[in-house]
Image 1 (cartoon, rainbow, N blue to C red):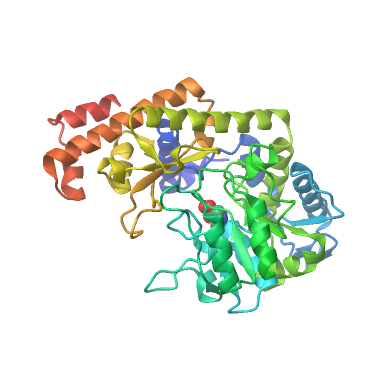
Image 2: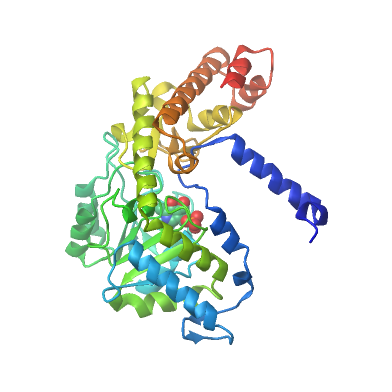
Length: 427
Ligand code: PLP
């Protein structure tokens, strides 16, 4: 069989370039990870060819006896990975990703225009938790439902549970979403349950970021408290890109119907196969060890940055990510992201609670799960910390001298005669 580069040189070359970019950079994107070669093998398998609308044993296409076994195995492994009894919990492994999984839950449990409360995007929540701005309903979750966000205490960066409960009593949501994309501390699920019970709301936990940590007991489990739990499968869980919805048995029918036929068509069977493989790995002692190292490495990075005078939102981390408050150092998140990228360190700018607008976020988010997969240890993370501190100092130096806009600043970075350029190359 001729190889891809000969058949389609454009795509072949783009994949090669991306492979090189990934292998040559330090990846600190908290939502990314490196799936195993077996996950890739399954994703590229014949499972991709089959249509199987419906559920195991109740499909709308013939020829699904193998796919039925595959999906049943995946569901089985999903419940086992999170230590859930099949008598009490059900799981749907068909969501195409985390966003459709969340929308399926709203579709299942709510009527159009019902009220929801999720963490605001500015404070670390996700778009699908009801995001809107003063001028626009950005997410479909705020177009179809009435959303009122809760936030964090701007001083501590911690979820303000008291304010959340007070707001819920007035707003009386039908559903509250706990979980975040950029929150560095453990979440107190019991506080959310109490807030929901006071107003008769469902509790949806979106554990997309931390599901690997939950499965390995590095983060308290939400299953005692939640009615429904969603997750992506590609962050700390390290599987293929996808989504899952766990729900209490009595909600099973509603959730399954919301995924199909309400929202989706045929399941992505190659993804389900790869997820089944990954869930077996998640239940292994090696994966527990991996998640322990993810958290330890994240803490090392946090202490390295604070030791060098940097401020972290909440002062540190309990999980795989940290939020670096750069406003305190006179920098923007965008500038830091660019300087780091020049040095092949990949981070993403992120709002911090004290930002007044999401347009120019004052922080960057750093995560440890991808580099821990690449076997970087605590010593390595200490070194990454010192690189980041140097990148920060370079960004500050450039800023202080030029005081110009980002475009000029970037042009300056490409001028080989500048000492900053040299320092960046060294980095
Ligand atoms: N929920 C949370 C908390 C997330 O952080 C994300 C993605 O980053 C999602 C949902 C959505 O996942 P996806 O990008 O797979 O749709």
